[in-house]
Image 1 (tube, chains in turn purple, yellow):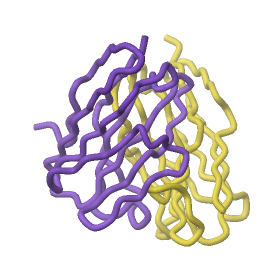
Image 2 (cartoon, each protein chain N blue to C red):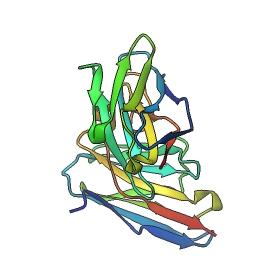
Image 3 (spheres, chains in turn blue, red):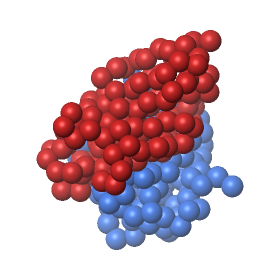
Image 4 (tube, rainbow over the protein chains, first blue to last red):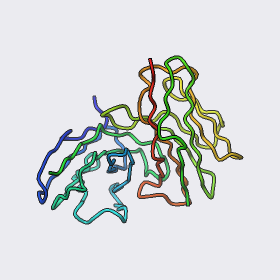
Length: 115
Length: 117
């Protein structure tokens, strides 16, 4: 049974569209994250979220918004997609906040291509 | 502030020979250090972690790393490479008091390990 699952695995869309990526974890973890990995494999944190606190990386455009219906789910919604948003987006979770642990469980990624 | 430098963007070794992936860190305090592996089209998986206990840390798949404070290094090694080790490897530093991003972590830029048959 997959610990951290994301859908869709692949997403191809046009500039200006709005899209969402869903993430679910069945580990009972408190904190979930979204990361962006560019074509050079460089990994950048976008958000961390638990039921008390949302921390947003200051470089993330406000077109990106996390939405969490419950502790086990953290979806990523992107408005007005741009070419530069093309990347692989990873969802991850940790038992406690990342600062205390560093031990993250990652999903398999969602490859977004904006045309 | 904390930072991490992976000294090689690509490392190529022959199957059966030793693997060395180098990582240097900078941290104002005593950090925790991690190595993650990413196989093609997969998410990252934790290989091993150092959290101020034994300086020689053993991980999965025969990998180990040694924390050397005097050299500010945390190099990853394996005695004998296997074809299945071909992947991207990330060194990560976590320092509760020196920030990092929204996750408190700083990722290295990755080292691509190539295994020659």
